[in-house]
Length: 184
Length: 201
Image 1 (cartoon, chains in turn blue, brown):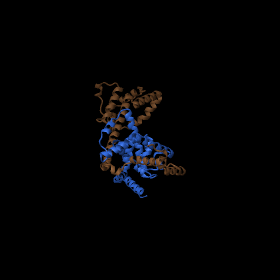
Image 2 (tube, each protein chain N blue to C red):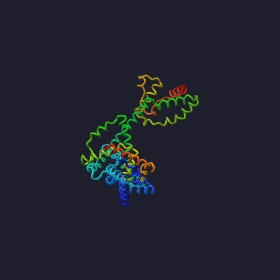
Image 3 (cartoon, each protein chain N blue to C red):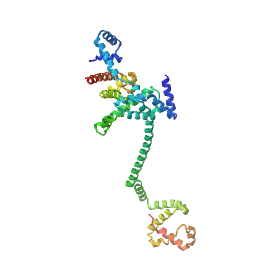
């Protein structure tokens, strides 16, 4: 597959010291990284933090990538793990009231939506997804938005296919229920 | 509208061939099920956005420059953190040495214990054995600090007063050979006998 060969060449070139190759890899996957982090965290502010963290991890770990899987699968694994860690930290901070960034996030007008209408739509999706339990949300995002197969999600998350299917089913039901409440 | 759960399984390709066949037959006959199917597809579609048309490109254009900036500041902060860690570790080590001084006390204790185990004969033998090494020390190698240290040790050993110290001669000014040449044989015998009488241990 030409895409994978290109990734291979870019990584080799980056390992040999070509910093521009790293930029090329990021340019290729930056949209996927951002949107996955956005859906997992539920707002632009937190997604941006996760994205920067993921880029740092990629920069430091790319030299250890063995091409046992596709690069995008590996990147998704990093984004998923970092997002989950970030969400855990965020919920802990909320419990102990260490963090007053929730106010900052709400008040922040910074977003990537082009218009107010788009921003509202995006916020609606963000709010809905945040109400879906984390395990179900993780599978739903990877299946529904990234259109990954259960085999790929299993490889990425390390969970059984049966468990993933059950989580997806419950996740979709939860979304249907939330949508129904939202419309009412 | 209530959605039949089988629609989720059907569209997610989670049905086996038999289940799929039965569902499709029912779907072709039931208007309600068909409507539920359309409703479900519509809800799922509303959850999607066209990402490329949706977002402002400025954020993605600035993503890498922002990362590069963070990367350089991270490297700097890592160096600063490392320097602080080393400084803190060194301070703790110095404090431990100053408070407990484990090396000095244990060394002195063990040396004193060792000496106390020697009999008089053993002590004399050791002194004779190492006296050869001591005679090999060249006076030119002794610096000012060591010289004053030796003077201090000698004066405390011989119970000399400050006025007596003025009578001592510096090793730099006069050679050992010239001192030997000035000592008469009677004086040498006297010194030798006095040394033999003195108990060092």
